[in-house]
Image 1: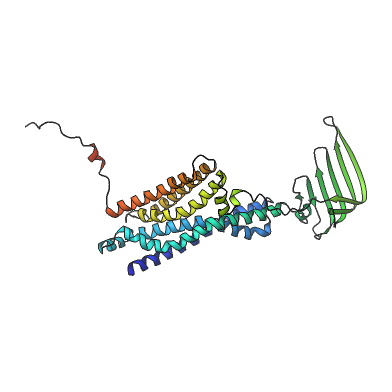
Image 2: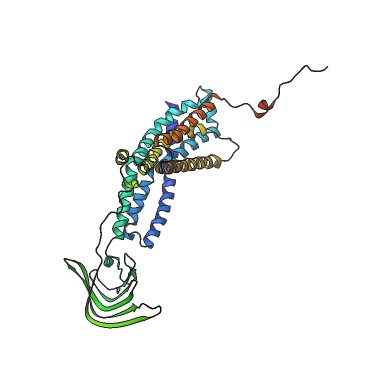
Length: 374
């Protein structure tokens, strides 16, 4: 049918363009944030692209919902502005007849939003945590970069190795160690790593060790300098733990359902809310689609962004209320998403029937008392 096919084609073009723009913006923000983590030593610089991919996939439900909402609202507003709606209304169409083709276009996107929120979101969060935890729990030697001062995982050591050093051996080594009772500086001409049953040992050759012992009285110190031909120091083992994967943020959705604790229900409210919000935003876009030909084009876009941000903040607030046990999970889902669904349907009904409240002056008119004087 011409009506439905033309509407779906224009929705597809608008949705594709909006999706590309929003994805580019999100990728730029994620890139800046990931590079900042890599610069602080909280993420592996070699995993920047992978971390960006996981972060973007985790935000996929939000990107798709906002893209779909803006595409529907901008397409229908453009039809109002170019007087195409007048033609369709004159041919017997109503605003409610736009719901069916819009839903036929939107249901594949809504399925992707549901799958991303219920399955992809916890998986990407878990993969991101494992990458960062694996990088944070690597051994002290793995942190050493030739020609750079690097700090150990617990912050008690600082390493420096010459630029020409290899992965398991190096020249011109500098190690600074500190704790509550002493400060020590070790320098050596060369060194290499030996793997023993008890762990990794760094064997230093031809060097000097300077240690400052802090005595009991304030301000008193003891300096001890020693030279060595061979000196061994233990390197902290490399842990490969995956971090706190028991957090509700990283649990699968089915696990949240089986273990209905308040924090798990709060996370479940967020994931289910992402799915339900997509449907509500589609109906809100149809109800909100109206444009004055004399008005600017940015008004509808600003209204769409404001509506989406308000809805998203309400979802975050509902998640916190459910997580802290302030409101039961079914009550919050029914109040928030059910209330917005009823509001969207009521708005759509008033727009479709042309019903509106009487003007304010109608309610302020007072009835006349008595007969008029002649």
